[in-house]
Image 1 (cartoon, helix red, strand yellow):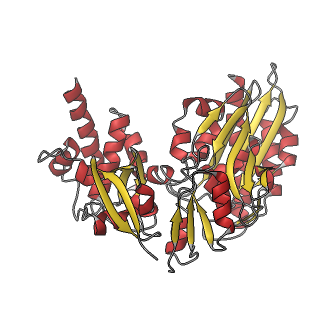
Image 2: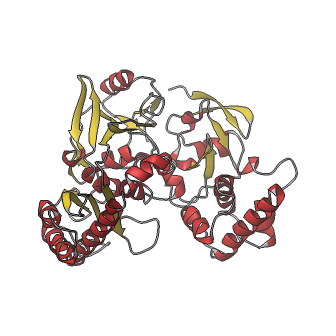
Image 3: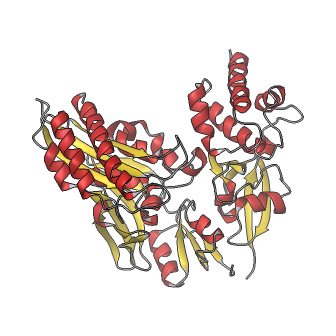
Length: 160
Length: 288
């Protein structure tokens, strides 16, 4: 069976790839397009390491078929920094040492950005609930939550 | 895993025709159950029929009669809809309990229903709100109340080649409100040990004139509990009525022992949740 030709937009740029029908978007991003920032933790939608935005909606890319990306907008961790300048969230994760092994980090940052884009002033509880589907097995979550809350405060300052 | 095809038809009739052409075809919405089952080796479809490019399968239409919810609409879209949240707070709370933010970005209430788990969070809320399934097939459309949709764990009334196109909820009467509660041993990201949905209508004096109670994860399918409804009907939803409703729910439950909880524990807790959800629904109904 011939592979599917998918034309899509990834991080604002036109992209195309060939994939198998049952191939997930995470595999296409990593192995077809070389965007290895999104990680596979569980492959079953439990861990959040593969989080991306599909038409602006936070989704687990392991549970999206690559073929679905046709004519859609995909945003990955590679699209978060602007040029060589880290996004505030990335900078705050560094400052707060909100990571150890780093496997969960891209998913946390993509998910946290999706939250802050719709709610610039979330409570700690809202951040914890929003990120409940992102699992970290190293640091515990406190530093991550603090980094996100500090990012939110910083971003509000930038807007003000 | 065998070689598969992927199709994203733009009409319901094309989707139905595709399914008829391929015995191992699977309709595909959010994929949060289907793709996990494929990965686990439980299913191996030869054709994925993506429903999300069919107009009406994704989206919310609200009019004077009520809500028409595209079956493949992600839970997150429902949870963000202010008017739907106001009219059916319990149903929306249930949708908001299904998995993580990411899962809610994909998983749909239609899929939650078609997966037909007795523990599915959205099903009790659909039942107590008198939701009706719009099912499309080769012979056209048919309507089935959600209450009659699931026939056992993982089983439902869909015939081969049929698909769930939409869910219809009638607009609630004045002073009507719903509530849904579930018990899990953690605060997030788990499957219900017990769930309870309640919808109550009160008259101007606060007397209950309509009651609907459904319980989840305590039987092979979500169950209506007529005895609990009878206990609330005609009452002011006071402590005595709540206690009778709780007892009726515990009596009606037919749970199993499993890793999530013992049958005895579930029987006890389902009464507690029915009591609490009824009190919440009544409080909401009073303020409408």
